[in-house]
Image 1 (cartoon, rainbow, N blue to C red):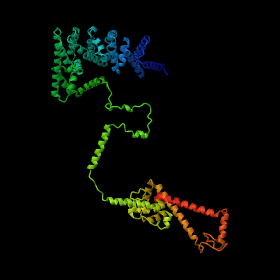
Image 2 (tube, one colour; image 1 turned 45 degrees about the vertical axis):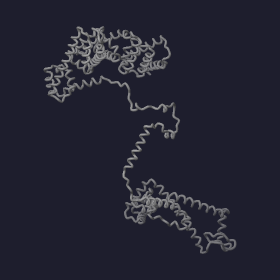
Image 3 (cartoon, rainbow, N blue to C red; image 1 turned 90 degrees about the vertical axis):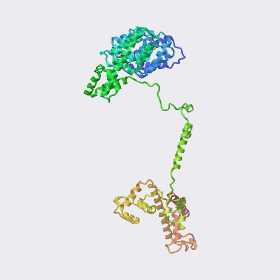
Image 4 (cartoon, helix red, strand yellow; image 1 turned 180 degrees about the vertical axis):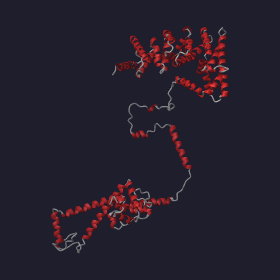
Length: 616
């Protein structure tokens, strides 16, 4: 960290600690003196430094000065001009409040500042092109009108007239001219005109006013600037002249006012002559342009000179646009109050809380306390308007009646209930497994599992098992490479389709179907169940292959018949086979047989559940 940065950090810490002291605590005089000297040194550094200082230093310093002012402790006199220069442009309201409090606390405060103001006047007269001095003068006039009195008081040796002469000189740069013009306007508006409103103003003030008006008659440009910034200037001068008591200066003051009015009327006649020839020009812009150049201010030749120059150079008035732009940039309008969209909304103090909110999500969502009566009324009116719009619309009846819709829903329900028992073994044994719902009325047209790219749901329902079985057997059956294969031709013969595009399109749509895995699982489960039934049927056929019915026999071969025939003739071949099987199984042949049957029952029950879930 550099030395300057560490020093700035120490200054910020010092002012922060001072600002944290309550106003109720009394401060030691020695501490106040040391603090005032330290503040003065910081202000001098801020005014003399060319680098941009940290904003925290400016903020902490102005807070300290304001806190001292609240404690009825004004700044020392040598610190006022640096304070105005540093904080006048951006913190004008705080500067005005501090100056006003200082004037109320110390009546002789303005007299104490006279040496510094006189020193500033001498610096301005000796170095007029120093924009820093002109800026200080302008900031003083904007910060306090009471301090501005020192610049136009008769005791100051007519400093206002000196500023006007500087403004008219050609040796002054444009930046300083703008600063001095702002000072003159502030002195005239808030100083000279306010003092002249008194019933009996002083003789010295009247002399100053006469001299000022005589200068205005000789400088139309300054007169124009005053009228543009103070539109009521001539009217207020007339009121002042009418309120004055008879004296030796009335005739001269009245004469100066009449001369100014003649100048303005002459300018109006020049403008009217130009407008007759060039009616498209703006009168306000033209008037300001004539005030700026002496060449066009002659009553007899002014209009003629302007018209000739305008025809030779049509962009003549663009110079005025640059002037107005520079004036507009100097006038900064500071917002007193920042406005917001929710300024008119009243805040509910019950909504304020300290710390984190411990409410749950459901409690926050169900909380309707923020809904005011106005919001509820708006919601209610909106709902009523929607209802009225709905009632005003014509009612369109569909071709299908309510009874047909009810019948369709009941048929759909009966179909879904029937599908539960489709793969039940007991239901198949009774002969109900051959029932198929081919009727189109029993099919749900809104079924999203149908994957065939046709318009007939009945065709989809019938052909879907064939397509899915073919897909399970040969996953590449729907690709273009499988067109010449035997299983593709077999599938097309089953579907009664001549073109390969239809089958391949179904394959594409089936790959995009989000329920593809569910459909394949459904048909793979049904395939396994059918295979188990086929095995059971083969076992029952073998029992009759020996040519002798299975059943009871004679002697020790009594018992249930098996695949090799029943035990019939004593110690026959079947009995010997049963013994051998028992020896192989460790003597647990009967128990093993019962466990196998239980396993088959469990498998059959699981298949039934899967068939019900899959809707097979």
